[in-house]
Length: 561
Picture 1: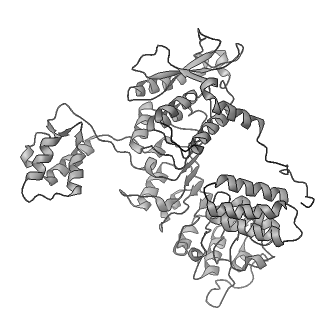
Picture 2: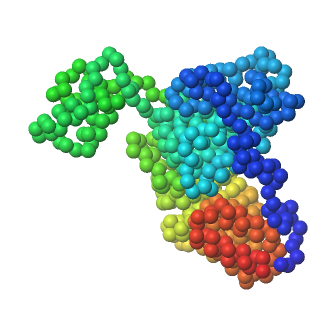
Picture 3: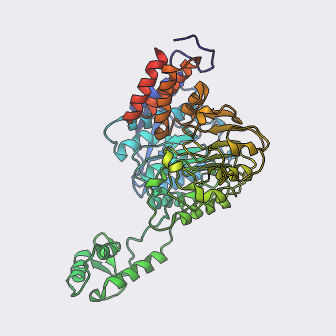
């Protein structure tokens, strides 16, 4: 390998830090180092006691008590295994909100574990779950997370539950007890959560996540309108499930459709249905639907999840093409979500199938908008151009066929001249770098900045970042008004692309192919070690992507030869 230019990240290997290694050991042996068990708690509370190994001189928060069996110290926390635990959850929340002057002087110490090691242990536990082939039961997950049900003992500011199967009650316990430290929450591909269940628990706990600033999701389940139905009311009659279904199906000229059965079944709970004194023989489909709508209107539903996140600033709704919004339009959904988040600065709608961006106009502090792989954006350019607070805009595409504009120079010129605060722009995978033509020249003159990309001549100042990877003739451009560029022209542009698109496998694949060409045939190259680190990170992050693994391995061969 040629001699490299010194770089702060140049190391022979990406060796994990000592704290990371220690956290991994704790996570792998949590049953010994974070011992959990019950000690005479009332069964109605279904709480747990968490024992953390500590020296007798360690400073612990309030509610400290020496274990009679050892020198361990423990703190009682909420496990939330069944409905009876809701009371314990609320009691714990009220206890933890005691005024500071009512606490012991020792309670000023923030946590049994410092926040960084604590959240590293939590991260390693979740990482171990993601790497195993068999899924864990809710009981196993609940037991492993019990230490983190105490935000004072094991605080965490960053919680990543991506790819983990959990329950509403487990997540509620974490959110309630970590609310004073939690700033970032990732629920990408997290399963087992429902809006009604989670929001009901948070509503009963009477808390808000006032420090949560970042939320990542790729499922709308948690953001749906939370609705739940009353199971039983003693003042109304109950009709057996078998009798009503038999009566309903045996009546002549009855439409025996799945929809009808579903409407009927929505009333049932434990084999009964609320009838409100109606004769069974008169319960046809219309009356069943009428009763259903009336009863639902009488039941108070909890607020939506965003109601509990008033300080949220960064919202990432990724892989939007997989979302299924059945009870409202996508525009209405965004209006409802944004109405609770007046402080939003970042919105990521990657891969959404959407054409109405008017709801974004209500976000007066929006500075970053990501529309990666959102198709047919040309019709929405004028709307995007009204978001004058934007500093960073990403309208890149992974597939060139989806990034074709009929008037590319006009579209880019509209954005450049309408967004005065723009410092970062990604137009990779589009034809927005095309030269002007007789039918596509919206300006007169040469602008104020020299640029090989026509529309960028009208920038007020050079950009801090410009993404032009996989654009028309971008590899031939040498005069580009940007400090950092992701593209195909030279080592700096390719490595910037590798860094920027690390979490986007559909774009990262051609970037790795480009790095293969660069390090096989290129000359005057100096950043081998940095390139190797980036390839290794990509391979580790996308282990299940066969094409990307092949491209990365080929690139790595020529980097280290």
